[in-house]
Length: 167
Image (cartoon, rainbow, N blue to C red; front, side, top):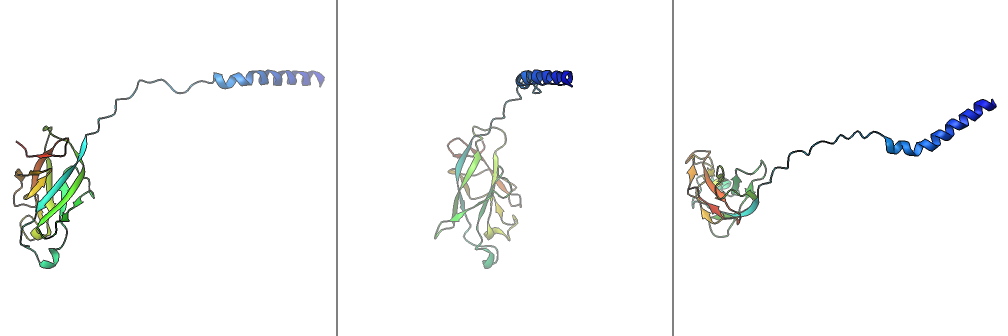
């Protein structure tokens, strides 16, 4: 038993001497790889003033004409629409669209913008309009889908939040 005990003590002593070095000698399982692709650049965004001039007469029942005017932009995700605020005593609705991607000078397609106006609910556009809109100080004149439910205006927006009609 004496010889067995001495060997055991010798093994334990060696293990204790080697143990501090075992942790630093472990295999590194993290393989060095080349860096991934660079992050995609995020588009510059700005806030843009929006103004809509409502027609003077409501084409729907008066009870529904009190509903708010809602602004939509092609860059907006579902649920991000902008409820415009009426200017007292006038048929003008205003608001500020935030996080509008800058796309001027023209790069790609212009932003499509429109409003839902309860005054126009009974019209052929079923309430949607791209007419009578001013975005970033620019009265929009390029209208697509005229007098259809998909009616909208086109606009480019610069770094200063100013709107530009397509050329």
